Length: 488
Image 1 (cartoon, rainbow, N blue to C red):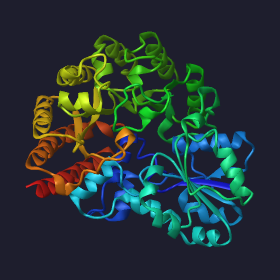
Image 2 (cartoon, rainbow, N blue to C red):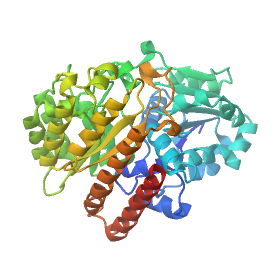
Image 3 (cartoon, one colour):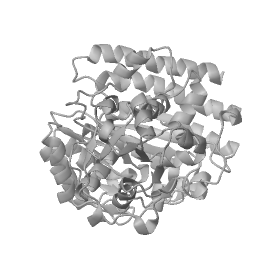
Image 4 (tube, one colour):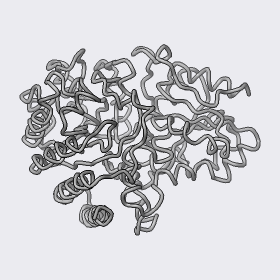
């Protein structure tokens, strides 16, 4: 084949069929030996001659687009590149957080301080493989893209050292064919290509995946209407997939034996909506269709405001999701702050249709609704937002205290300059004030309590559950122990 597509070991895994276990790859190296941590968090999949049965969804989209345009392309597991790369002309690599500059990795690595993050190390391993270095000498082109592509702007020396020919940032379905054609013709490539808004693909130009995605993850829409200044997703137009497109992609996974799905959007609760009010008919139709096809449903993201604005609708969705095959569901939820002032300054539409002043009550209403409907949230807070004051931190601490009965994880993450705030300064560990440290301590106490209870049900359907539960609880304890030592 002319084109090989791959991703590093931390991305080419099903995480024991639990998508959110994948966040463990942001952890730094620790006292667990590599082989044990890999088995625990990101075990390799069994391949068919090096071809993985599932691959990251974003990689599948690029694969589909290239196939639609007639390119000879194959997606391979990173450990099997040596069996395919000799005749390849292009190696495309999907990246999520290649240098550990994302909020989660930045926070964990700097706080726990035990070593390099796994996802950083294993990304480098791909480019350092002897077979890749040898292929590069004979003329192989290396093109990198994915959610973590922005990080290469901060590492030009790495790009040169490892012979990366082009880095692509953004939704690239419209331009990827032309880019790869240039590479095949040995034409000059841009060092860094940022896809413009005019090249963002409209709905009808986004291809259906042709091969299964990891853990059945399916995109139901792109873009976001919230407009948070710290987020780059809000810079893209909002598009919702029709049910027919979602069903077609789901059937690709179902035909491969995947009996669950993760619905991906920046706010799944707003599926089909043109504003910040959920569209009852469309969101219920979506879940009825999905549940008819698979036994289990998860969400990638949702917002407190869209849950709080219609608790009754959320309960109706839960009535569809929770059955004899599924006892709970969950998503990542961005709380970000307990300060109405910061909401107004940095994310004024996040509370809509409520007022920024109502934000703490919005969060508590949403938390109660989630608790009542067997929904387990992984919540994030932003530490060190520009213009943050001591009073803002105190209000966030008070909100976390109020959420003590909310079955969830609440994870504080250091501010990373992105979106409209990309020119701001990074928040660094050395800038932690005593109030910041108290906020982190409050979150540690909350997470240590709830993580044990969540883990009891997380792997309950798997025969390895007793072993997993013990090891994961020990890992949670260790991370919290290290964090507490640092925060003393």
